[in-house]
Length: 279
Image (tube, rainbow, N blue to C red; front, top):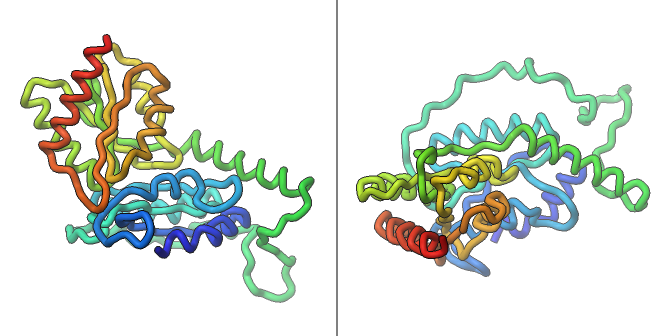
């Protein structure tokens, strides 16, 4: 599988602080797997899939329009922070055909010249972009400088979309294709008299923990449910964000299977019943 074989190179790029954008359209796995949609690469994308202490900015589209818009955004963020950025989509997003409105062309002259970039011109100061830092007394401050950049990204770039969470007793969360189905499930739950809402992370790294913490602090919220095309990966970040204030449950499908609205409604009802039994 291609993206797994590229992890060493991505680690090198991160260490050398070279902006780039990587697109990972996730398919079923592990191993050779299949071409059906899945979300089992979440850990690899958000926790640093290669060796060493580094992160990518990870954006998660749930439509073809967002795949386009987020790609533009990813290049801007990578360039701004000098980090690799990743578009993390599941295989269904990768195969969808939807109308797209392209952003207007930009004048690239507005982008300032980089004082670190190599140009290939003779007669200029020599610039070296390198990831080979052998001496511990040099590597540690370099890694610390990378972490300072990630801290800045965390402060400035967390993004999520909340839907009907203000009075929700159960808050569902999903990204990519499942987020579209979860939104429909929220509407179906509302019709059944259950106050449901959902949070859709736009950035998977940095994870929008502030959106979850705000919901967890509300007295009306009784439980969270993470819906994923995996056996449970993003749910770990949800639990960290909720920080024990409310129970967090999980519902997932794997192997290329995608849950339907009715499945998610039942999972939400079950999670809410379990949470109420604990109160």
